[in-house]
Amino acid sequence: MKYLAILPAVFALSACSTVTESPVIYHKTSPGLESLQNNENCCETLSNIQYQNIANPQETFVSITTASPKVEFKSGRSFAEGIKLPTTLDAIRFSVTSNAGYSTFVPSLLVLDQNYQPLDVIGNESIKYQPLSLLDGAQYGAQVELQERYLNGEAPAYLVVFTTSEALSETTPVEKPSDMAMRSGDIQANIAHNTDYEIPHSAIGKVSFDFEFTAVTTVVEEQNRQKRVQQIIPEASAIKSDLLTENPLNQKEVYSTLIENSVSSGDFSAALTYVEESERLGIEGMRNTFVDAMKQYQKAQ
Image (tube, rainbow, N blue to C red; front, side, top):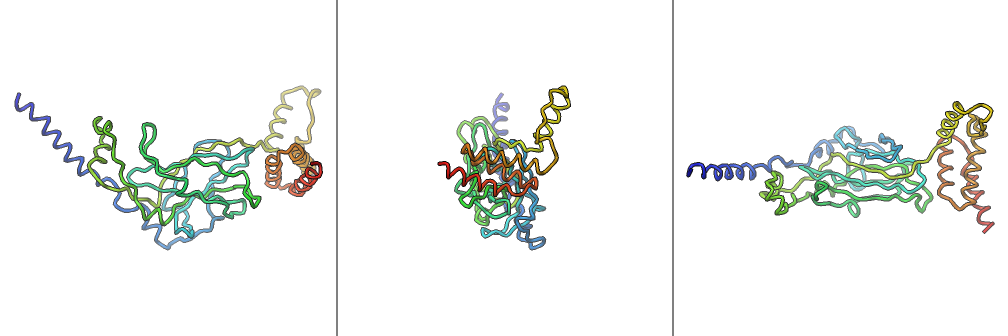
């Protein structure tokens, strides 16, 4: 019985010995930094980045790797990836998170207009460290709402995901666990308890986005919807619409009407959305239609 009583203590000592040595699993240097500092394949312009298209509200992952384009920002060189924002009926809202594990990529976001010109930067004043919780691991993150239109009249069209030299030069301390986590025997909690190790900030990593917005139904989608309806309902009761034609002149009239009606009702955001949509479809003159409609609206006030 005496020997049996000693065994748990021996195992406990052995476990403690393993735990105190386990911090070696953390990265000692910043992952991807050496490749980033290499001048090979440096550097790309913002217009040459491949932008991932977002068509519907959904969770999206952006992977920053050593194969990602290198961009020389004023804040320092960084690997970068991009997101093409959708045309929406309302403001685009999203959460952005990057896990803080054995290393962490601290993201910043550059907001661009349709000509790849910068409109805003979302950095460390918004994207902050969020400690381990019951529902989520430790991470850097933020809740973001983009302006529908900036003071220069431009709408956000792209997001560039990157990091800064300042972020790469810093570290995140391993968070000390709660007493409850320690008592539960959680291995990671014991690792954190037995070390003062700090997590290096990485030049590479995976960033998660969860988008919320109301997508615009384009005229082309509306055409296809009505065509499906026409194939089902009797010919005699079919309602012919200019939206069903492929004639650009008719499409131009449709957009003119949509823009004018939106302005007259005071819904300027919807009117501008129709302007942008028409331009993507190659329909000319709709921006002038919007300006003329605005002049008429102001005269009527």
